[in-house]
Image (tube, rainbow, N blue to C red; front, top):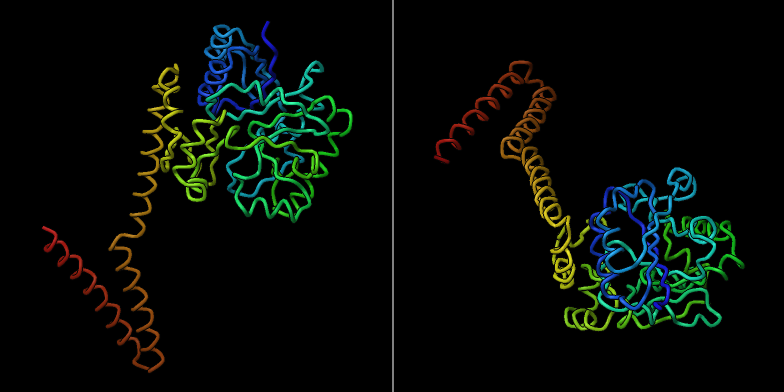
Length: 354
């Protein structure tokens, strides 16, 4: 009989097809566990997850959709303008008291921009001791993140691959306690951030598993701070690879730049029923980017630069004419000369560009 493993993941109609890689790699690499995957979403229907349910049946696992009310949560959650996070990513605040079934006693977080590369059961089954949460150690966190948590009076918490003692949290905290910590974070940073919030809530009660054997993040910052050799070494020992991103929203399916783990994500993606859509979406992203570049080019062409220069020059010379009492004739002469100069410049450029 396989031991039960409860997993939490958030996604929606906009991005759920990319989560297929996470789900498949999760089921495939954990054959000795009976997985109950709780997908928290504001808009997904069972009909959307046809292929995902087929995966669950193939590996004898389970998928349960939990409905999340984004409109309600929006009254409490705050993001800065331009942040790419959806309110649904903050459903973890409501996870323990409103979303999970009563029979769930512990749960592990796996995000949809990940690929599972190992068996999670050992980390999932780790004894909590006197702690509320188990998560990857802070050694992979950027220094400014660690410094901020120290200043705030909390501990570093890595959300991906974190395991929560649901029963104890329900017993000793309320939803209002969680939201109160979020208010502290919002006052300091201007937006909600679950790692900071839970780092405050569970300060002194977080059990760490070394990041090298639990989770490795791959993005531009981590490549710079940890280096290629370290990251590729961690890929061989970690249980999960997380492709976190910043405002550029770089992901394996939107490769703003390349990181080593993308090749692993695409290995699973090749077997996805959405594989063609992944490729076509990349083309669309590229075409949209090129269209934006061309639009910018239109606004900074030589014609616009030259015209702006001439207009500014005419305004200055006309002002000089008026100040020096050169009169209207002087102003008209300057304006006429500018027009002739502009037309001549265009003709000369056209001849030279042939």
